[in-house]
Amino acid sequence: MPAERCVAFAPGRVNLIGEHTDYNQGLALPFAIREGVTVRAQAISGSPARIRAQAQDLGESDEFPVDHPFRVEGWRAFVRGVVAELGRAGIALPGARLAISGQLPRGAGLSSSAAMEVALCLALIGLSHEQRGEVLGPVDRTEIARLCARVENDWVGARTGLLDQLACVYGEPDAALRIDFRSLSIEPIPLALGDWRLVVLDSGERHCLADSGYNERGRECAQACRLLGIASLRDADPGAAAALPQPLRRRAEHVLSENERVEDTVAALGHGDMPAVGALLNASHASLRDCYEVSTPAVEAAVLRLRDAGAVGARLIGGGFGGSVLGLFAPEVKPPAGALEVRPSAGAHLI
Image 1 (cartoon, one colour):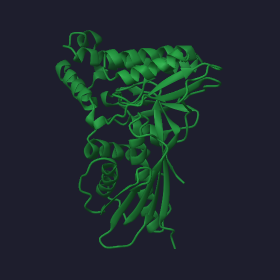
Image 2 (image 1 turned 180 degrees about the horizontal axis):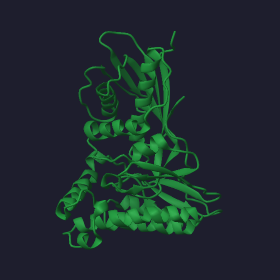
Image 3 (image 1 turned 90 degrees about the vertical axis):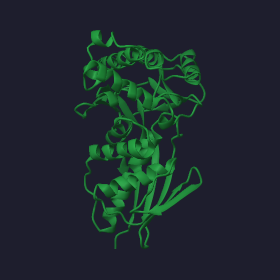
Image 4 (image 1 turned 60 degrees about the vertical axis):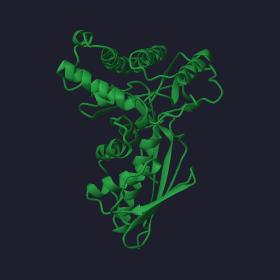
């Protein structure tokens, strides 16, 4: 008899460089990290089939019918959205008890939401196969990323691109991922840190992309494209973009320069030039602060803490408006208290 249970793990991510470029069909260089979200799914009987979900870290629960996951807010929206989107994709789900736990702080810019979406998706797909006595074979990781992005967009209300989800499902040890969001081509880029360290420091300011200025930035980029007569800011001519009204001019300037910084970072990593990587992190932060305007006083204080401690480069990561910052430290330079070292790790998988 099949065990009718399935456990999935999905990692958070750190985006080395290439911020707010994914929904502009640009370039980014994220990597998955060791910390993430685990979902334990067990089939339960009953008619109609129901989902009973428990967020163990929050001490909260939810229950709803598999075939009618009406909309709610908060963490429950992710669970219901995944169940609904899997149903629309033609995957027959049994009733299930879901236990959700994680090591990622919510709203800290480490993509706890994408990790939860992907872990839920894998666990429920695996459980569906287990119930039928089948072994889950290779899955289309890009399609899982697309499904989870629909959850983020349509059920949670954050108009994100695919960066977080693709980093989560394609992550590799010791490598960042150069992602081209136009073609969705993904190229592992060796991230040979040696004795250098990448750390994240929580600004202490929680963010929720659906409620922050994140969606407004997406609308501004779309407006800039309409004025320029192009499909994506990636196609913007710098001269034409310079004639845009503010703040659209600044938004376009960030996207164009950030795409260049991704390519420059790939080249610097290829040469083992970590000080150059640090300088690019600093330039990215300045652009995010001044051109894209997604920083906050708490974020700036966290960046300053890293630089005062000796970071050769530091920048905000994630959507901004709070969350964590990333710092690059040379060997034997000690990061400040509270900083978490991060290294590239494997992508989402069944346990």
